[in-house]
Length: 280
Image (cartoon, rainbow, N blue to C red; front, side, top):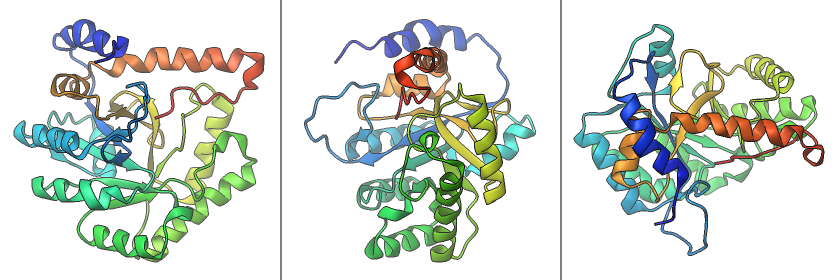
């Protein structure tokens, strides 16, 4: 196992502190991407976005064994705004719309009676995949927008951003016949760019979105914008102890150095203010 500062800090420094600390209501939102066996490429555990079916099954078994229940992002928002703690509530999300969700993840979720939200980049969902999306939606899987072409939104003019947000939402609604409220920001979220964040908030609200998530690390809380809720990245490198620590809040601290790193990148002349550091 590779030496991981985020793991060491979470298990041996943050975890003991969180067990003694009373915090405002916070609910974990897990982020998965591809559910498949490793392709053999070397990747830092921090940036890994692949989770093996076996590891995913272990995670879901742990949640079931410990009395967790899955909720949608709408209910999650309502609980946070009302200040309602929900110790065993959790939201599970998947980015990018990989077909291995249908093949591997859904059967496991179904086994434990769990729901999840899948965020789709609509340009990459073909005719066959649309049938699978309809089938999953009918079975209780929620869907949200992940733009049309999965671009780096911060690098686009506002008109193109508007098109990405509006057209992706319309496409999913037309194919599912249901209202789409949720959005997931593609690539690393530029939380240090207040001007861009304000523009994106207005654009999302105009496009009709009610809630959203991003790549900022931490559990969701009422202090964060409802459109850019924090999440916890999960992958094959998360053994049960580390997974448990993330659920309990011991990984939330990683969001602070993540933010510092983005601020430093934004200040560097070579970055041009377009840093995408810390993507998951």
